[in-house]
Length: 383
Image (cartoon, rainbow, N blue to C red; front, side, top):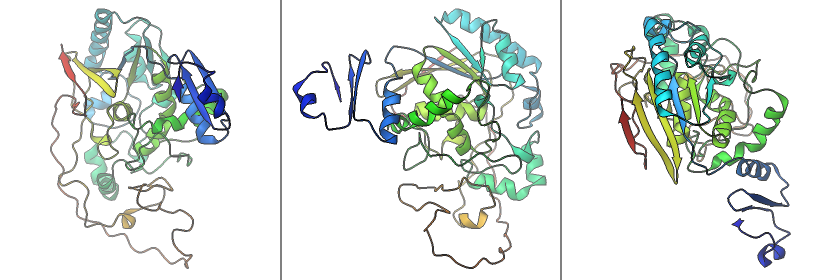
């Protein structure tokens, strides 16, 4: 309920109802009989957003040595071209003359080295670290396909839910901030209201910029979406922010602001040495792309030809911890996998041998600019 007066007859007659009244676009709030979990989340969200004009700048770190070698993950340093991008980024920000700009980075060296060249204060967020590739860390895709062919197939089957083997597994947390049908972050549907009470205890209990679920590691895009919930909340409540992050992290943030589905999220193109300026507007987000004209390798891997193979039953491809428990590809229509009561108890038998399906030919990598084809999005290219 939104209005201009806290003493209206309508409110007086409905004091037995649960509601929040936002007065003068956040100047005052009237909260009445907020009692349960979801209601508290909505209240916290509404009390932290603002309508003042601001922009969010997203970019990846400069090209790293592992990028040049074609390796994923790791904690390598910047290449010579990556350092050149850092200097170009500093010139770009000086020309933009952004007031009260905050700079956030991950805790990986390539992200920190990029921010160091800016010669401005910056904050390190551990939850902005790149997705963990487990046993595939510091390997090329060709090496992964050769060494772990089954894992390579599994990831192509469902890149959003696939979890790299090895390392710790993040705890099962409430699925919030996602569209009920796709499971992905969404700004338009405002399901994001549901994060508030989930974020508040963590913000009070630990410093999100240096510590977050230290005993768990996110190894799938679905895990990463859950991990980034506090970052999304902070971006909504802050002013101008530059986020120097990584490819998977940038994809998740873009999916939130551009209303992309879980199926499209892992394939959003986020090239190196490009800055995206996101300006929230009514019913959408304006996107501007700035290519800083510093050469870099293309790290994008296209969606496999033909998409997910329909001739392979998904449960047959499940391995332990490869998917988040209580998850489903269509949460709105299908029962949750592994949930209590889905099927009657039955005797445990030895697991059948896993047949290896034929891997469809992958599409060739192609370097192309970031796509901003979401509804209501306008793109501007600048040099």
